[in-house]
Length: 200
Image 1 (cartoon, one colour):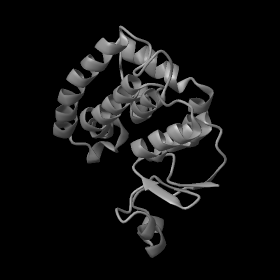
Image 2: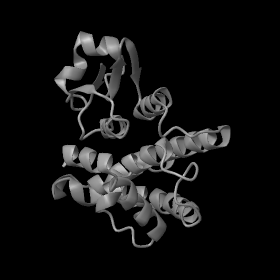
Image 3: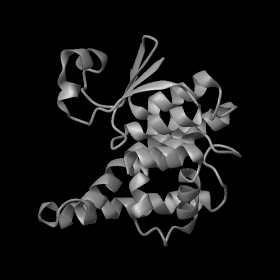
């Protein structure tokens, strides 16, 4: 059975969502990032980085949420693009998100609203927002022309980017209507609702 390490309040939400999309039975070890459980010799033997998520799929150990999701989708023959062009778009958008939006959205939300006011740093929020705007403009321009990122249906590309934009659900996205509609549509999927409930 698939064993999954990582709290839904971490990037493991992506792998939990994927497992539920694919209806894969799994054992979930609810480890928070940087928790004592991720510093044990047993866990560090699985992932020397000490980060979550990590999966153990009948002896095959893999870390990094984007890679895990691509692996699971391809292995189980669902949500993985059917042709080389779709596969390339999946890689493009998954890697683009980790570079252009992942940390930026986390930092913006933390330092504008999520952290206690005394811990917020306006300079961090402003710098993050300055990077978010052009990235969201790019994403909005693409989604204004197509419903999905890597083909004619929902794929791991959409799941990877939408899950990374979880905090976007609490942001004012009115200036990016195509992103807002797409993000809500992704998270409205039954598995997306279940993953969100695990986090909230």
